Image (cartoon, rainbow over all chains, first blue to last red; front, side, top):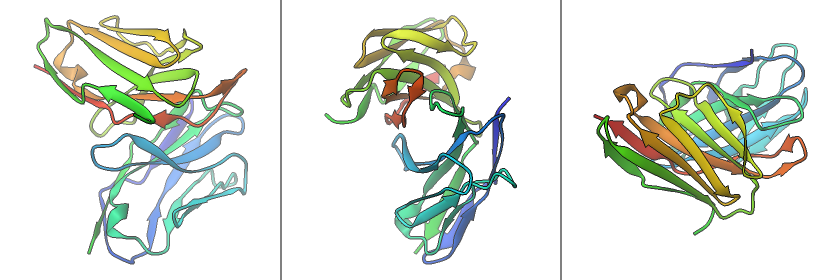
Length: 113
Length: 115
């Protein structure tokens, strides 16, 4: 079945550092890929998405590129802020449908001032 | 209220209690979801309702019983739970068009502790 593997956390960075959170997936067909973020005490929010190979999703300075050849969707940000401290989830959905989302286990990011 | 709301935010119950979790969405969506989020485990999809009909039931024990009376409300009825059921229960909603489901919007969750 489908699966998503994320780098284990926690990740601790200083403000303005470069961030990479690795995500690889296993799926049949051509899934859509997502990054969700969960701030303390809140539900998950969609951060960005990509629906086909070589698509780049971007939002709030975060970027991720759908790499079919390496089955990866790594999350990057050039300069993190304290307010980016949260748990980040990589997820995929069946091709053509977002009904069944398969999530990774999440990566806790803490950004220190 | 906007978005997806869940009540209560925190719940402590004994194994013999019966309680219900409530979810309400104010987004005009027509699909709703229950997820279980346990520590150090991926989110687990429990149930999906589309147009008030259950379309997914991922091998969830019968001590969890969902109810979707209309497209804006979703309940999760709980009875005779086990301590391992302690988790954050997240509700989500989305818009569907035929067999295509769009982005899911999540509520803040109910933190459940079973003693």
